[in-house]
Image 1 (cartoon, rainbow, N blue to C red):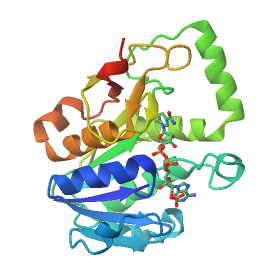
Image 2: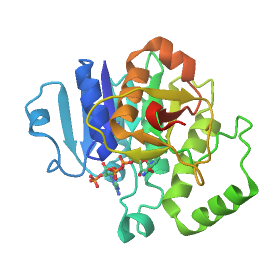
Image 3: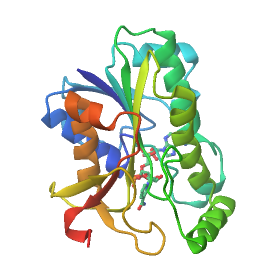
Length: 243
Ligand SMILES: NC(=O)c1ccc[n+]([C@@H]2O[C@H](COP(=O)([O-])OP(=O)(O)OC[C@H]3O[C@@H](n4cnc5c(N)ncnc54)[C@H](OP(=O)(O)O)[C@@H]3O)[C@@H](O)[C@H]2O)c1
């Protein structure tokens, strides 16, 4: 199986690629620079490194790169500096999802391709009843106004939910919603829920990036797990910080 990972040079993207390699998967990555990548990837025949800025690719190039991929995973996120938050591309995550899905459709694959989006507990799954307090609504409203990357994350999940939908011939999707991201070296116990079990704003839990990568890799490699969560937005917390 081959998975295309975008955002593979990021802290979570790297963990996802490592987890896919542990599962003996072939991985294609599209990164702006190879500088941060582990040396071991550069000589690994299972890793195909493409150096490009994802949204600069032509439609033809996108279709070429997703061709033959069983899954596509996005761990993209805006860099947390002024340029990353307020500069272009404002719609990095959404436009990438839209263009990669369009490339998948162009290729008319025999089996649906899995699209796994790294999203956030700050976003709600509007297919479900996910009530939030008035105070949280106000804060999220402010975040929407002040932080364009949050709107981008919301729009990306909405694109999959409403435009790809539940019955697409060529694409199935899952939007994984991590709570507060932390760094850990080892996979630990974690729990998965259909909706947040705590406030993402006033009582955020924690989840390690390696656990997010582990879960995303399991979704891609385990058909039963995929079928359990496809078309949904599972929330992930470290077991140790859940209570
Ligand atoms: N922080 C939290 O607690 C939290 C919680 C839940 C969800 N999230 C979401 O998860 C995302 C990923 O988190 P992370 O910590 O793994 O992020 P990260 O380390 O900042 O990685 C971001 C990735 O996106 C790429 N990227 C950024 N701007 C780009 C552009 N203009 N064109 C192409 N690629 C671009 C980066 O590439 P370069 O290496 O080339 O810059 C990098 O590969 C966050 O951004 C956020 O939306 C965060």
